[in-house]
Structure formats: C-alpha cells, structure tokens
Image (tube, rainbow, N blue to C red; front, side):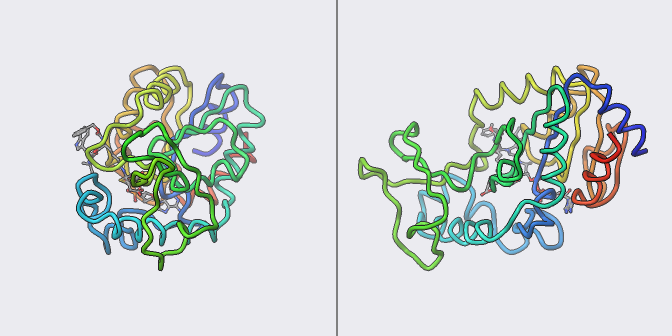
Length: 245
Ligand code: BJW
C-alpha cells in the first residue's frame, strides 16, 4: 500500500494534506473525540459556541488559556516535519488544517490554510477585523488569570476560532475548495471526518478525480471513500511516506 501511495505522490502535480487533531496527538495535544478526547471531559456547547461565550466568557477564556498552556509546551512531531519536507520537494503542496495549534507552521510548512482559526489569535467582539496576536507570554496565557482580555477599543476579545454554528471564513473556505478541486492526491491525516463543512472536502476531491489516502490509527466515517488506507500513527506513517517518495 505505501509504495502505491508513494508512486501517486511522486507523480502528482499537486498534493493536499487535510489534517486534524490526530496529527498533533503525538506532540501531546489532546484530540476532541475518542477515549482521551476533550469532548469526554468538556461539553462543546458549554465552551465552543458563541452562546457559551455570551453566557460565561470567563469560563471559555479559562478553557482556552488552559489549552494555550498545553500547546505552548509542545513541539511539532515527525508527522508535521514529514509534511514540511514533502512540501519542500514537491511542485505544489498545501496543508489544510482544522487544527488551531500552529504546529504545521512551526514544523516549517509554508503553505498552510488554517480552517478553524488559531488559538494564539484573539479578535474583537465588536470589530471582528481587529485581530490581536497573543503568542505565549502575558496574562492571556495563564489559566489562573480571570482577567478578560480586551481590544484597544475596550470591547471584549474572543478566541479567533470557529465555534459550532459559526461559518468558516469565506476566503479560507474558497481556498480550501480550490485546493481540493485541483489536487491529484489528497492525504487525509488524523481527522474523524465528522465536522462539516470540512468533512465534505474529501468527497469534493474525489468528485474532481483525486486519489484519496487516509492516514489514521482507526477507521473513520471517511474510510469508505478512500483509495488507500495507511493504518498507523501519523508520526510513523508520514516519515515512512516521505522516505518512500
Ligand atoms: C490519529 C492519531 C495519530 C488519533 N495518528 N490519527 C452538516 C453540514 C454542515 C454543517 C453541519 C452539518 N451537521 C452539523 C453541522 C454543524 C457543525 C457540525 O459539523 N457538527 C457535527 C459535529 C455534526 N458544523 C459547524 O457548526 C461548522 N460551521 C458550519 O457548518 O457553519 C454553517 C452553519 C452555521 C449554522 C448552522 C449550521 C451550519 C463549524 C465547525 C467548527 C468546529 N470547531 C471545532 C472546535 C472549536 C473549539 C476549539 O478548537 O477550540 O474544531 S470542533 C472540533 O472538531 C475542532 C476540530 O477542528 C474539529 C474536527 O476534529 P478532528 O480534527 O477530526 O479531531 P477528532 O478528535 O474528531 O478526531 C481525531 C482523529 O485522529 C481520530 O480519527 C483518531 O482516530 C485520529 N488519531 N491519534 C493518526 N497518532
């Protein structure tokens, strides 16, 4: 199976990697679903919706500060690095990631589209165009802080993350749709494929004639439409693929 995937990647004019929480699991970032996923201990409707933020912004910010602390302490793993290495060698390679941890960029990937935002950015609740970069340091990273971060205009800041019931940035979604429509190979790495509209991208790629490859430790809702399945941890499978291409 790996040699066939390597052949397809080598021959491709354009490759896209669609990644999810599973690629960062080996770095120590918790996934959302599954045995040890965040949604086992936290209810998404209490933390990851605009209603939850309106009800209790302190609770939501505490949760994000806790996650920022975890992410501040981790490094990209061999899976992230393998994607960056493939990008450096192939004619066109794009990472579409649902992850908000920024680890693809840290690993050296240059062409990265962050579909669900970035945990290190906050944005104004009144003027959404005002974005504040809050990289590790300062009170916004300490989970003990109850301080609510504010924009220069005085309004509350919120995490620049796409919550349930919110639409993805139209430009970002259009970029993703174009990338999958024009790719020859789509690598689908460490995602359960349950969250829309991102979960519809593999079908769009298939419709446009791409070869679909799933890299995951477990079967997912997308497995049934795959051309190839590489079962195993992304931190092992992706370096093996990089070596074989
Ligand atoms: C490994 C591994 C290793 C582990 N190696 N693999 C139908 C159509 C359109 C929309 C909807 C619809 N039905 C419902 C909706 C609404 C909703 C939705 O999709 N709900 C579903 C849950 C049913 N979607 C939305 O609300 C989206 N907006 C939208 O659709 O706007 C239009 C609209 C507006 C109003 C009403 C209706 C429509 C927005 C979704 C935003 C999602 N945001 C989140 C979290 C925000 C909080 C935060 O991060 O701080 O994004 S949800 C969460 O799930 C996070 C992730 O990016 C996303 C995807 O999760 P992912 O990455 O797949 O992780 P897991 O944990 O699910 O899976 C991990 C995988 O890794 C597993 O498969 C493991 O096996 C694997 N793995 N270790 C390889 N080492």
